[in-house]
Structures are given as C-alpha cells and as structure tokens.
Length: 407
Ligand SMILES: [Zn+2]
Ligand SMILES: [Zn+2]
Image 1: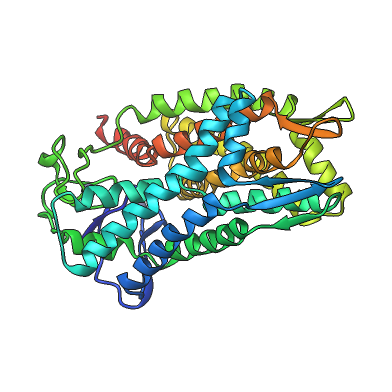
Image 2: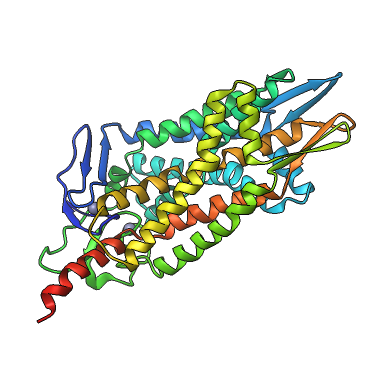
C-alpha cells in the first residue's frame, strides 16, 4: 500500500502492519505509520467515555477554597466567565475554545465516526468528519488543562485548604482517557476502513493528501481527496510566507509576555504583579520543584524552542542545505507535538481566578502578559501547522540538481 510521507513527500510502499509496529520513513526518519494492534472498539470506548465525562467535568466544581468561613468554587466555565468580565476577552475566548469547546467537538465527532465504522456505515461525509476530529486533536486540551489545575492546586494548597470537587475527579478521568484514546486510536486503520488506499502507477508523479496520506496521481491536484474531501495540494499554499508572518508575530509578543505580569493579586489593598519568572520563583520557594521545572519548560523553554526551531527551518528553505535535514524535520515534528503544552500557565490563571476572590483580603485576575503569552502560544502553534517541512527537502534537492544541470 502506498503512503505519502507528510514530512518529506516521499512515496513509500508500506506492507500492512501486524500488531504493535511502527513504519519509519527511510528518507526523513519520521513516523509513517503506527499500528498499536488494538481494535477500533477500544478507541471508541475511550473516546465515548471521555466525551461523557466532559459533561460532569464542565458542570461540577473542580476545586473549592475556604477562608474565614467563605468558600469559593472553580468550575471549568467560571474561570472563562470571570476572565471575560475582567475584560481579558482574548484569553477568555481562547481558554473557552481549547478547554471547553474543542474537547466536546473532538470527542463527539471521534465517537460518532468510530461508531459508524464499527457498525459498518460508510456515508460519504465520514472521511470529512474524521479529518476534522483529527485536526481538533491538537486544539482540544483537557490533559493540558488538568496540568494547569495541578499547578494551581499546588500553589494554593501551600497556603490555604483546597478541596478537589466531583468535577475535578471527572476532569482527571477525562484527561487520562483523552491520553488513552490518543494511544489506542489507530488512525491509519480507520482511514483504510473509510476508504482503502490505492496504489498509483509508480512511473507517474504522485501527490499525497495532507490529512489522510492517500497517494494519488499528480493530475488530481486541485481536486478534493476522495477519502477526506480536503483540497489536494502538492505543497501547503503560501506555507513559507504564512509561517514567517506568524513567527515574526511570535517574536514581537514574546517580549511583553515576559516583561509584563501574567496575573495581578490584590492583597489587603496592595497590588502584587506576577510575571512568568515570578511564578517559577514562587514554586521553587514553596519547594514545589517538579512544578517549577514544568512551568519553566512549558512557559519559557518550549516557546523559545518553537520560535528558534521554526526560524532555523525557514532559513533552510531560503538557504538550502542538505545538512541536518533529518534533524530539522524531526525538530519541526517535535515542535508541533509539544506546542499545546505551553498553555499550562494560562490555564492555571483560569483555574485560580474564581478561587481567589475574597474582596478586602485577596483577589486575583489576569494581566496584559497573559494575553501576549497566549497569543505567542497560538501563533507558534499555527506556525508549526502552517509550515511545510517538504519545502526544506525540495530546496535541498534543487541545490543538488542545479550543478548537474549547468553545462
Ligand atoms: Zn519522510
Ligand atoms: Zn485525504
């Protein structure tokens, strides 16, 4: 069966994998196909259980804090509403999209598609729905939100009594099942069930579908993929310019994200701003070393690595070189995978805000740094999605071909 490698564009003939096996692209060393030997039923059970658990996780209180006889509860939506009321609309809208909306749509669609495949129904729109659910995997973040809750819990429990509510337990289960459904889902098997792979004539040029990896004759460019209905392109359109614009925007916002406070507390009438570094310092002072290292990695190291890695990749399209091509491709793949984890710090603020509302004693809210930071995360996530690693391979191939063509 022919599969188009989405990282270097090479067409590979991969025999069906049996059991838990991985097929690696011999050109770029990235994963072509992974088979985990688990049935579609297991993935369906995990996806549907996650979907059902999202309801109580959203409706019931995640955590509660008591101080001087007053109790404050935090729900998934209450942080969003409070951020909105405090006029941090960009942060509120993005937290709502990643933590509330995207998980419902992602797991709702995935459950529907897997149930249809399991029951043997193959309507023509099934591939399109599966493509959408796979795209949303990146943006649905109950697992990242859970880590945000853990950081919030760690920081608060050091000074105040915190109780984990029923919603919190459901969120823990939903986040674990979200990770489990990612591990059990064998996307290639589902794609094959929706529409089998076709082997194009190896003698003619071929293109691969960006979403489902279906290899088709090059003449199909511009038409819709017969499996997932995505418009077929040899390379992502304007990938270089779009990625460059997003990376520049990321660099511009990185400075205010680190200079300005992410959140501001008002303690007995005194304003106490917290920048990213202050938050990390506080966690270390409270001897919460693992959480301090985690926030350093997610809020400082990962955004920097993403911007520098993408800059290196963009430079190698303009100044082609076949050196470190495999490393650069793997780096882009890694950047794309870890990008979503940078949201931990912003999610911590969303969890924190409804809990610490004791007017006259202590109140907290987001600050301008949070808007700048979440935009850095979103721009770099879009940049890694927009960038086409195949451009680096094309550019390197062209420079290798050029001396041979010159007389
Ligand atoms: Zn490859
Ligand atoms: Zn497709």
